[in-house]
Length: 90
Image (cartoon, rainbow, N blue to C red; front, side, top):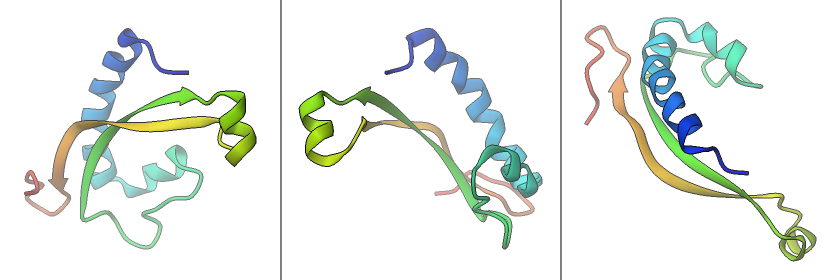
């Protein structure tokens, strides 16, 4: 099941705010992820990638157990550092 165009576009503003929030408050990840990837230390840099998910057919699911095919769609938010200056990462 893929997201509709309106849903995809509504995710972009959130995706732009999320990196700043994670850089300034890494504990926020506790509420967003099953396992907090930043529990040991805050992130050094963050980027946001977009993916499209499509359901597999029965043959594929039976062959490898996969219910979804994930395809990378591209960069939603350019990489940025989380240091004191919080600049865009190279």
